[in-house]
Image (tube, rainbow, N blue to C red; front, side):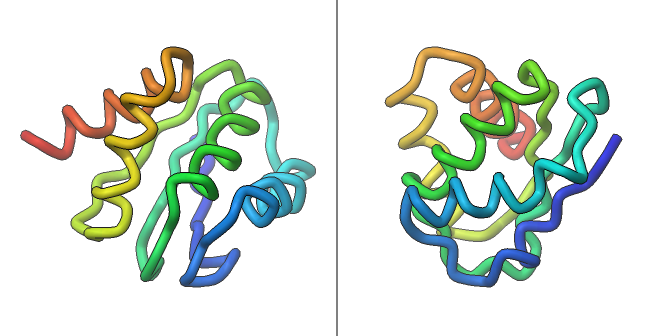
Length: 104
């Protein structure tokens, strides 16, 4: 399992183009066969558009083998349900699994 620490892209993660840029930056370090976990630690703000762009590319790249680590970050917790309801694909599955885990 490989961990992606989103703080390496900054602590304010906004806009779809920056989400794409972040994925493009990390992609050479990824193996599509290795599951990935996303760590939100030290991220102050994240928008649904940034997260959607990043997660969509990541999920496509490694066939949905993505886990979102639990967080209490209000910005992340606000963005996740937006994605869960807006999408009906691998990204929605990833987000819904994470939301279920965080509610336990």
